[in-house]
Amino acid sequence: MVKTYSKKKHGNKRLSAHFRLYEFACSDGTDTVKVSTTNLKMLEKIRAKFGGSITITSGNRSYAYNKKIGGASNSAHVTGRAVDFVVYDKKGKAVSGKKICKYLESQKWKWGIGYMGNATHMDTKFTGNRMDETKKDKSDRNGYYTLQRHGQTFHTYFGSNFVVEASTLNIRKKPTTKSAVMGKLKKGQKVKGQILDNWLKLGSGRYCCIKDKHGTYLK
Ligand SMILES: [Zn+2]
Image 1: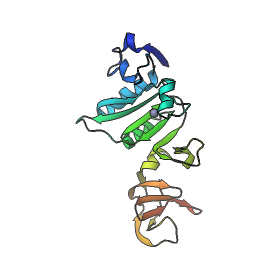
Image 2: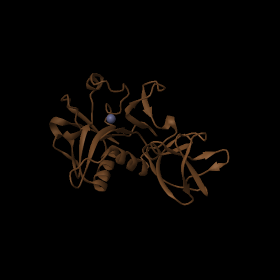
Image 3: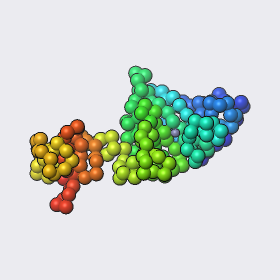
Image 4: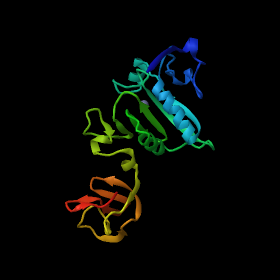
């Protein structure tokens, strides 16, 4: 649900345990502030998980302000359905956006998640949308790099833990079976990597095949 407030009247109002209304207001001084209660609940959950405070870097955007900063014409920030924020841990250190994106994914967040580097975008408008906002994608109409277009989640995109299923798995220099073998992985071995089509990137110059016509080799 999205609730509408006046910054003048309710600016200091506590919307939840740790967030006040003014934090979501548009920086151009627009009085109307819309806040998604679903976003608020998740912000509290993230805060509890990572232990520190959260700074809202962009909440509401008036239509004019959104246009001025080059935001998407259908931006969820205009309707109060989006927040960009930075999360801090107990020691006051910023938590990487990668961790926040992966956490939201693990919580089965249904709508949009955007990786922005240190900050994270979260909205309740675009179902299933996963974006790397630090990248552009020419194949997308609006130039957005969406993970779903590339068959990925934030877990596979930023790397996750996998278990080797095959008896042995070759580590190759490049993601092709013609490339030189650098070493082997054994069955049951845990590896961390990033999925690139049918290959797992273990690090630069170290790849292993995830699946081919003979089967799937990682779980
Ligand atoms: Zn955003």
